[in-house]
Each structure stands twice: as C-alpha cells, then as structure tokens.
Length: 111
Length: 113
Image (cartoon, rainbow over the protein chains, first blue to last red):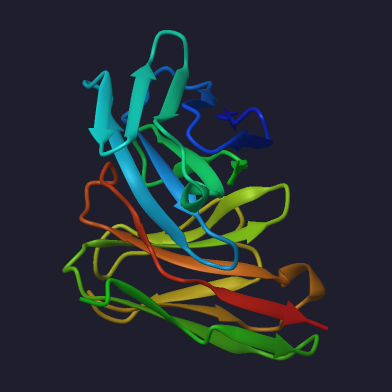
C-alpha cells in the first residue's frame, strides 16, 4: 500500500531560522510530488510541484527537492517568518488520478 | 479569477438527511476531485472525474455519489448522511492527465448530528 509520511508532526522554530520539512513515500514509480500549505480553517495552497525528472524546484524562499531512490522529498524554508506558520502537506502522485497525501507538519515560527 | 469555489462553507445535517456539495472551477481544467480531510487521517480521495463525462471511485466512495455536470462543475451528494461523514470536504481540479498540479477550493465543513 502506498504511504506518505511526514515527520515531525509539529515543529516550532524562532524567526529567521532556516528549516527543513521531510516527506517520505513508498512508491518509487512516482510521477510527481506536490507541496502544499494549509492555514487553519482554509483550503490547500499549492507551493511547489516537482516532476519525477526533476531534482528540485525553487520559489522565493522555498526550495523543494526530490530523491526517488531514497523515497524522500524535503521542503527547505529560508529565513523563516511568523507568516510561514501553517501546516505543510506533501502529496505524491504515481500514475493514476490519485494523489496520496501525508498528514502534514504543523509549523510555528516564533517572533 | 476565482479558481475553485465551493458552496456551502458550513453545513449541519441530521442523520439521514441528504445534501449536495457544489464545486466549480474557472481554469478550464479537465480533471476534478473530491476529498475529505479528517484529523490524523490526511486527505482521502472520495471520487474523481478525469474528464467531462467520466467519474471514478477513489479511496472512500461509500455513502457518496457525484455528478460531473459540465466541464466547470462537479458536485458531491450525500444521500443519507451519517455521523461518520462529519468532515471537511475539499474540491480540487487539475489541467488533466492526472499528473498535473492540483488546485484546491476553500472547503465545506460538514457536521452530521
């Protein structure tokens, strides 16, 4: 059964710190992996999509990497800000119309 | 540009009542999806529509039906609501091919008493 795991479930860091969020998946035949942000009571906002042929994607202070051989993706957030506080979800897609979601990492950036 | 819209935002039902959740997208996307999100469970796919005129079951379809009304609209119906269907429901869309970036609506928070 395909699974996506995100560890840790929660993380608190002081403002300005660089941080890494982890996402592990079991399916090596991955097509792409997408990172989302979810604010409390809101929908999911797409942050980055990495295709299986890519190693990483960057958007502003965010950088996501993909290592298919180890079944891991990381989301790097540079110079964290209180506005980055949210839950971050990853979802892997492996060739059907179905994405498998992790349960998320709840990030709190302290001012 | 509204993206993906969902109505209603909140709903309270009694066990056995029926209702339809509405979803529309204005991005000319081919594929649309319905998910439910429960604490500790992550998002789970209920149904999806790869293209206009087609629908398929996802991971947790029991108790639900869907209609792809046209390319823009994809509705989710609960025929006889049960407390286990208390959840937050999200609609999403993607360009197509099943391997594209997904865009989500704001969600519907449903409580079944």
